[in-house]
Amino acid sequence: MQTQRAFGQDSAAKVAVVISPALFVPVSVAAQGGLQLAVSRRLSLLAEAAFPLFEPDNTTYQKIDYWRVGLEIRHRLPQKNFRRYLALQGSYLFRELTNAGGGNYYTRNQTFAYSSAHIKSPVLSTAVKLGMELPIGKRTFFDLFAGVGVRMIFNRYTTGMALVTSIEPEKQNFLKFDNAWLYNYTLVRPHFTTGLRFGVWL
Image 1 (cartoon, rainbow, N blue to C red):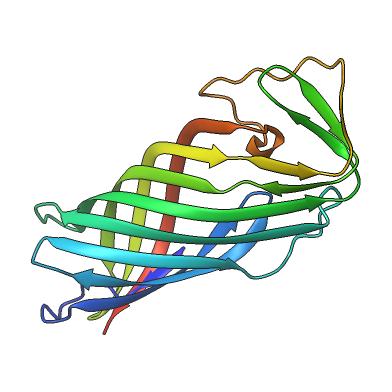
Image 2 (image 1 turned 90 degrees about the vertical axis):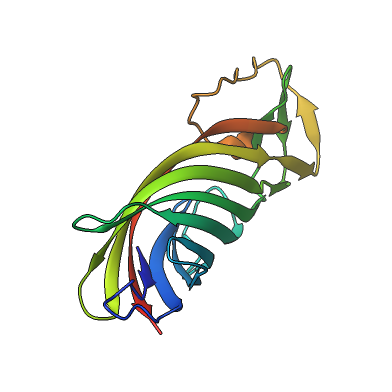
Protein backbone atom coordinates (compact mmCIF):
# COMPACT_ATOMS: atom_id res chain seq x y z
CA MET A 1 0.00 0.00 0.00
CA GLN A 2 1.26 3.48 -0.77
CA THR A 3 0.08 6.86 0.46
CA GLN A 4 -0.59 9.55 -2.06
CA ARG A 5 -2.60 12.64 -1.99
CA ALA A 6 -5.27 11.97 -4.49
CA PHE A 7 -6.47 13.93 -7.47
CA GLY A 8 -9.05 15.32 -5.10
CA GLN A 9 -11.54 18.08 -5.87
CA ASP A 10 -8.77 20.71 -6.00
CA SER A 11 -7.78 20.84 -9.68
CA ALA A 12 -4.94 23.30 -8.94
CA ALA A 13 -2.96 20.74 -6.93
CA LYS A 14 0.16 19.62 -8.78
CA VAL A 15 2.16 17.56 -6.24
CA ALA A 16 1.01 14.59 -4.17
CA VAL A 17 2.77 12.76 -1.32
CA VAL A 18 2.43 8.97 -1.40
CA ILE A 19 3.15 6.23 1.16
CA SER A 20 2.54 2.47 1.29
CA PRO A 21 3.86 -0.80 2.66
CA ALA A 22 5.98 -2.96 0.36
CA LEU A 23 7.23 -6.54 0.42
CA PHE A 24 10.78 -7.72 -0.30
CA VAL A 25 11.84 -11.33 -0.97
CA PRO A 26 13.15 -13.06 1.18
CA VAL A 27 10.21 -11.83 3.22
CA SER A 28 10.67 -8.42 4.81
CA VAL A 29 8.15 -5.60 5.18
CA ALA A 30 9.26 -2.19 3.93
CA ALA A 31 8.01 1.39 4.06
CA GLN A 32 7.56 3.02 0.67
CA GLY A 33 6.98 6.67 -0.10
CA GLY A 34 7.24 9.10 -2.94
CA LEU A 35 6.05 12.15 -4.83
CA GLN A 36 3.62 12.40 -7.72
CA LEU A 37 3.83 15.39 -10.08
CA ALA A 38 0.98 16.35 -12.40
CA VAL A 39 2.71 17.39 -15.63
CA SER A 40 -0.51 18.09 -17.53
CA ARG A 41 -4.22 17.32 -17.30
CA ARG A 42 -3.66 13.68 -18.27
CA LEU A 43 0.06 13.02 -17.69
CA SER A 44 1.82 12.59 -14.34
CA LEU A 45 5.10 11.24 -12.96
CA LEU A 46 5.52 9.23 -9.76
CA ALA A 47 8.92 8.69 -8.08
CA GLU A 48 9.17 6.31 -5.10
CA ALA A 49 11.68 4.69 -2.77
CA ALA A 50 11.31 1.76 -0.34
CA PHE A 51 13.42 0.71 2.64
CA PRO A 52 12.92 -2.27 5.00
CA LEU A 53 11.48 -1.66 8.44
CA PHE A 54 13.38 -4.59 9.96
CA GLU A 55 15.82 -7.37 9.04
CA PRO A 56 14.05 -10.74 8.87
CA ASP A 57 14.95 -13.46 11.34
CA ASN A 58 16.26 -15.77 8.63
CA THR A 59 18.03 -19.04 9.47
CA THR A 60 19.77 -19.33 6.07
CA TYR A 61 21.15 -15.84 5.49
CA GLN A 62 22.96 -14.01 8.27
CA LYS A 63 22.52 -10.63 6.60
CA ILE A 64 20.13 -9.30 3.95
CA ASP A 65 20.30 -5.75 2.59
CA TYR A 66 17.65 -4.20 0.35
CA TRP A 67 16.33 -0.94 -0.97
CA ARG A 68 14.30 -0.05 -4.05
CA VAL A 69 13.65 3.00 -6.21
CA GLY A 70 11.16 3.39 -9.01
CA LEU A 71 9.74 5.81 -11.57
CA GLU A 72 6.28 5.62 -13.07
CA ILE A 73 4.77 7.52 -16.02
CA ARG A 74 0.97 7.72 -15.94
CA HIS A 75 -1.61 8.60 -18.56
CA ARG A 76 -5.09 9.27 -17.18
CA LEU A 77 -7.87 7.59 -19.16
CA PRO A 78 -11.20 9.28 -19.94
CA GLN A 79 -12.93 9.76 -16.60
CA LYS A 80 -16.07 7.86 -15.67
CA ASN A 81 -16.89 7.10 -12.05
CA PHE A 82 -13.22 6.86 -11.00
CA ARG A 83 -9.94 8.30 -12.22
CA ARG A 84 -8.50 5.43 -14.21
CA TYR A 85 -4.96 5.44 -15.57
CA LEU A 86 -2.51 3.42 -17.65
CA ALA A 87 1.11 3.49 -16.44
CA LEU A 88 4.59 2.32 -17.36
CA GLN A 89 6.74 1.59 -14.30
CA GLY A 90 10.46 0.91 -14.03
CA SER A 91 12.28 0.03 -10.80
CA TYR A 92 15.67 -0.99 -9.45
CA LEU A 93 16.03 -3.27 -6.42
CA PHE A 94 19.34 -3.38 -4.57
CA ARG A 95 19.66 -6.78 -2.87
CA GLU A 96 22.66 -8.43 -1.18
CA LEU A 97 22.68 -11.58 0.98
CA THR A 98 25.37 -13.12 3.18
CA ASN A 99 25.38 -16.85 3.93
CA ALA A 100 28.12 -17.90 6.36
CA GLY A 101 26.72 -21.39 6.86
CA GLY A 102 27.41 -22.90 3.44
CA GLY A 103 25.13 -23.99 0.63
CA ASN A 104 24.86 -24.61 -3.11
CA TYR A 105 24.54 -22.42 -6.16
CA TYR A 106 23.95 -23.25 -9.82
CA THR A 107 25.71 -22.23 -12.99
CA ARG A 108 24.24 -23.17 -16.35
CA ASN A 109 26.17 -26.45 -16.44
CA GLN A 110 27.33 -27.24 -12.89
CA THR A 111 26.35 -27.13 -9.22
CA PHE A 112 28.84 -25.75 -6.69
CA ALA A 113 28.95 -26.26 -2.92
CA TYR A 114 30.40 -23.34 -0.96
CA SER A 115 31.51 -22.80 2.64
CA SER A 116 30.36 -19.15 2.75
CA ALA A 117 29.15 -16.63 0.22
CA HIS A 118 28.28 -13.00 -0.37
CA ILE A 119 25.55 -12.80 -3.01
CA LYS A 120 24.80 -9.72 -5.09
CA SER A 121 21.36 -10.04 -6.69
CA PRO A 122 20.06 -6.67 -7.97
CA VAL A 123 16.85 -6.61 -10.00
CA LEU A 124 15.69 -4.37 -12.84
CA SER A 125 11.98 -4.59 -13.59
CA THR A 126 9.43 -2.94 -15.83
CA ALA A 127 5.65 -3.32 -15.91
CA VAL A 128 2.55 -1.98 -17.61
CA LYS A 129 -0.07 -1.14 -14.99
CA LEU A 130 -3.77 -0.35 -14.94
CA GLY A 131 -5.10 1.51 -11.93
CA MET A 132 -7.78 3.75 -10.53
CA GLU A 133 -7.83 6.48 -7.92
CA LEU A 134 -10.77 6.44 -5.53
CA PRO A 135 -11.37 9.83 -3.85
CA ILE A 136 -12.04 9.66 -0.11
CA GLY A 137 -11.88 13.40 0.55
CA LYS A 138 -11.21 16.72 -1.13
CA ARG A 139 -7.46 16.03 -1.25
CA THR A 140 -7.11 12.37 -0.28
CA PHE A 141 -7.58 9.12 -2.19
CA PHE A 142 -6.86 5.43 -2.47
CA ASP A 143 -4.96 4.18 -5.52
CA LEU A 144 -5.65 0.59 -6.55
CA PHE A 145 -3.47 -0.95 -9.28
CA ALA A 146 -2.27 -4.15 -10.93
CA GLY A 147 0.29 -4.79 -13.64
CA VAL A 148 2.48 -7.27 -15.47
CA GLY A 149 5.93 -7.07 -17.03
CA VAL A 150 9.42 -8.59 -16.90
CA ARG A 151 12.35 -8.48 -14.49
CA MET A 152 16.05 -9.17 -14.92
CA ILE A 153 18.00 -10.57 -11.94
CA PHE A 154 21.78 -10.06 -12.07
CA ASN A 155 23.32 -12.63 -9.71
CA ARG A 156 26.99 -12.75 -8.71
CA TYR A 157 28.58 -14.91 -6.01
CA THR A 158 31.75 -14.18 -4.04
CA THR A 159 32.61 -17.32 -2.06
CA GLY A 160 35.11 -18.80 0.32
CA MET A 161 35.85 -22.37 -0.73
CA ALA A 162 33.63 -23.59 -3.60
CA LEU A 163 33.74 -27.13 -5.03
CA VAL A 164 32.04 -28.68 -8.03
CA THR A 165 29.48 -31.32 -7.05
CA SER A 166 27.83 -34.16 -8.96
CA ILE A 167 24.39 -32.62 -8.47
CA GLU A 168 22.60 -31.81 -11.72
CA PRO A 169 22.01 -28.03 -11.90
CA GLU A 170 18.43 -26.79 -11.91
CA LYS A 171 17.21 -25.92 -15.39
CA GLN A 172 15.72 -22.52 -16.01
CA ASN A 173 12.70 -21.39 -17.98
CA PHE A 174 10.83 -18.10 -18.12
CA LEU A 175 8.02 -19.30 -15.83
CA LYS A 176 10.18 -20.77 -13.05
CA PHE A 177 9.48 -19.17 -9.66
CA ASP A 178 12.09 -20.52 -7.23
CA ASN A 179 14.64 -18.30 -5.42
CA ALA A 180 16.38 -16.44 -8.24
CA TRP A 181 19.58 -15.73 -6.24
CA LEU A 182 20.45 -19.46 -6.20
CA TYR A 183 21.72 -19.10 -9.79
CA ASN A 184 25.09 -17.52 -10.52
CA TYR A 185 24.04 -15.88 -13.78
CA THR A 186 21.47 -13.42 -15.12
CA LEU A 187 17.83 -14.50 -15.21
CA VAL A 188 14.76 -13.09 -16.97
CA ARG A 189 11.42 -13.79 -15.32
CA PRO A 190 7.86 -12.47 -15.40
CA HIS A 191 7.02 -9.63 -13.06
CA PHE A 192 3.63 -9.12 -11.41
CA THR A 193 2.64 -6.16 -9.27
CA THR A 194 -0.48 -5.17 -7.39
CA GLY A 195 -1.20 -2.92 -4.46
CA LEU A 196 -3.14 -0.20 -2.71
CA ARG A 197 -1.83 3.29 -2.05
CA PHE A 198 -3.12 6.19 0.01
CA GLY A 199 -2.34 9.74 -1.09
CA VAL A 200 -2.72 13.43 -0.36
CA TRP A 201 -2.37 16.35 -2.77
CA LEU A 202 -0.36 19.25 -1.37
